Length: 169
Image (cartoon, helix red, strand yellow):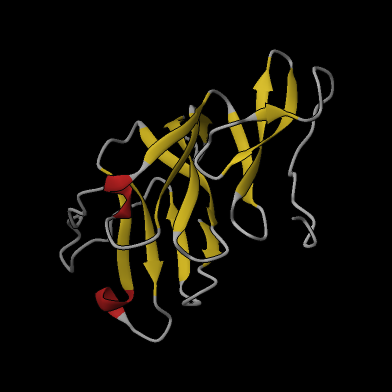
């Protein structure tokens, strides 16, 4: 389980990987219709009313990881991945979708390749992330729609978890 917080609503945004369905009283599994999913949880509600699906994958091979809400709460960065069966996935890129009910249906792939550790700038106009190039992991910065991506650390080094300074402009 991965959790982020929508800065506007203070709802929890939760990424679930390899969901084990609950069982009925007679021990039969409940059909959920998904294996992996991103949900918005309203802590003021309970039961099924608390969970709003953003993106659900009925395909066991397709999962999402590393969710990150934009500062204005309008969008969500995530890593689409090939599920490896051990609670983890292998990144196939960096994607974004609206942070709203069924927002995943309007999502788009921003960057192809082995990407990790996405984060927004404080103003939400830029994103920063790690991208594997050969044996190295470089830091990239791009516009929030994925355009104008550029490597800011060069061709050597293995970086992780880049963040913008709170004073970044």
